[in-house]
Image 1 (cartoon, rainbow, N blue to C red):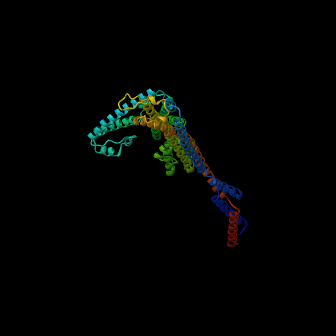
Image 2: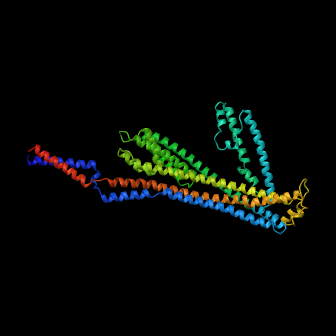
Image 3: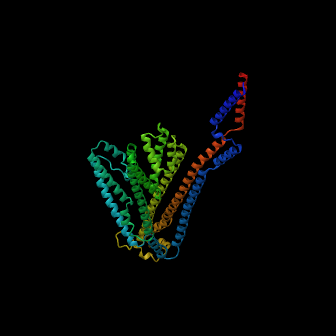
Length: 524
């Protein structure tokens, strides 16, 4: 073989070697054993970090702390009751040991005793009216040959199962009448169980003391909750309107290039609504936007899966999905548009990461909503607890203040100056008087132990809800970081494991040498 011929062959072999390296390794990046070990060590160390366990431990600690506080409250109430019982059975007159403490506690809870008596009458009137209205509604259901649902079954917005089946075979007029009766039942149930705002205003708001504070807090919580719901509903309606306008503009822009300015204007309006939802600091609004972003991400991922057509564009349906997704997910816009310009699909990993993050945001919003609702429910239960405690004290006071004028009632006025133990031991004390003394004492002690402890435990549980909200957001934040770091560490480990190793080059050179020798043998 002549030298030019051998040179040409050598060039061909070297070109073949270079092509093989370029195809097998990206950019001829050399393999680094140090970098590989570092990445492997980082991956191993990160796998050892158990972020969910840290949050679980904190939640367990908070639960144990709450349980301890609740148990301590029971013990404290028992101690107070026992101490007061020893005082009651002492040598001082019944007025100082029992009657005056009952009056003082009643005033502390609800203010004026006469105002509380009036509130009890108003409550009874409300209950009587509710019972009468329920009887009328029961006849309405019976006229349609339907059993009246219980208040529990009628709660919410869904139609109870039996009524739903009946509606399927009913006329439009009968179905509309049933809806009216069902809505009336829900209003009556709300009034009868004390959850109606008008009932609270009529029965509990006129009272003073701790009841006034509890009612004020409940009304503030309820108003704030209703306001946040309304703001989120209004923002959701504005989003739906802006979304429909933008989708219409996109559809028009696909057939008419002159519609591009209108499409840009609609996109700007949609982005403005999305920004308002994002910056509202409202859990209900966060739920709306996170749920919508998840829906749009799912559609956009489907578009990515479908791929591009021959012109490097998305299909008509995919273009509509992508257009909306790129507006409400502006962080993905540049990458996706660049990918489309290069006639390739956007990377799926960032989309999947963003989907995981939005799912976690949705979970955080739902937890926040549940916590706010729990706080409102506990505020309402606190009003009931105060009312029950005040009712026990009010009954005890009324029993001790009996003067015997009403038929069948004992006269306890002359016993006020006598110690309770002496009055109970005196043979002159009538069975009726003793029964009244035992009843009043028992009611007072029940107020000190069971009802006082229940009220304070409701306060502790309400405080625990605030801790749970903060912990839930901390947990979601750690899970978001985990989602990001998991992918980053895995990618670093995968990249560091690649590259051109010395063994690859030696094997390739050996192959080139063999090819050269073979070429020389066959072409002497």
